[in-house]
Image (cartoon, rainbow, N blue to C red; front, side):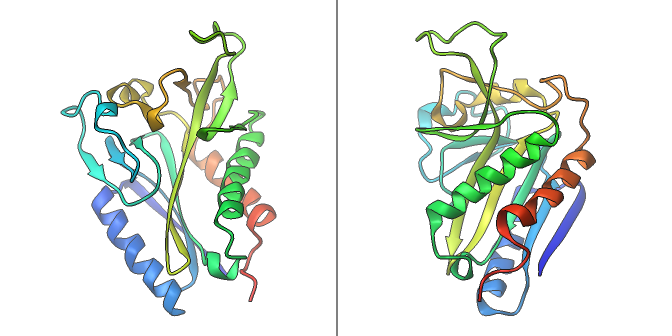
Length: 220
């Protein structure tokens, strides 16, 4: 079974990483169940393994944490639902690409519960929404905004880190970085899109769509 955990208030990034590493080791050893941990962080930036120093535009604005997850710079903060995903990918097919696609599909299914169409774009990590009401980008491409980020790490075939969905964060906080190294497009949230959604609403949608995407238990 997958254990669902939920933390009220704001969880420090250091505490979250420490717990994830311990739980991932226990899952790999067969002494703990898989887990999904839902939480919020205080305002902070994380630098993934591909982060470029020039993409940290305002280094003094919020704490910056070096992360061993894949990807570049991301922001976490209040109003953003972080879901840390600790699953045994070794028992779920040992296909990292397919696992990342499952994470994408999970986000898309969650957004669909609020009539928001999330989409994947080649060469751009995360989940995006079209913004036809906004002017085209400087290259003439249709406007799109990022609504969710995805970044994982595997240890002994157990995943940790995971996804973040913008519910109602302060979108101005993203200005201190180039999110995921992408300058041409912006960021948005469910509330920014006109959906009066609460964090609790998102949690329900995440739980309701999880089994359809991942299955309740790993394959033996």
